[in-house]
Length: 119
Image (cartoon, rainbow, N blue to C red; front, side):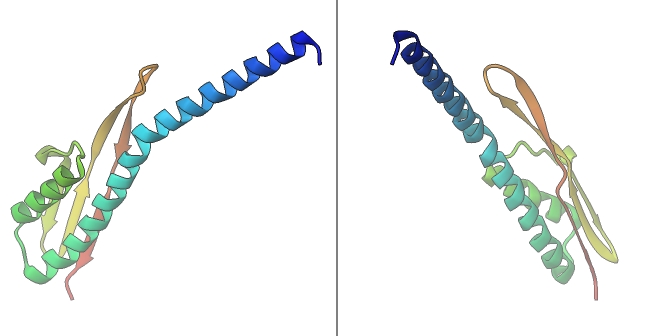
């Protein structure tokens, strides 16, 4: 094996390792946010069913959604949660999560919602 071939192989290995490290870092920052959103969506579906049965007020439902989001570490504020209670319970959440990957930053936008009609 020539010396120049060995150097090119080391450069490729370093590039691949840097790429894998960047991918792992981005995954470490992004995946927990997707999991949190999935859990919030599941929670508000269950809450819509429960609020229909309990005949909870819109404010009570909104407070419970905010508590769920806070427990999950999601940046959801009262202005991000819309609850309508009547013949059906509708819960809509619209929020953004800022992601800083050191090289660039962006916002992830989520809009989980749930609806349940009374029987």
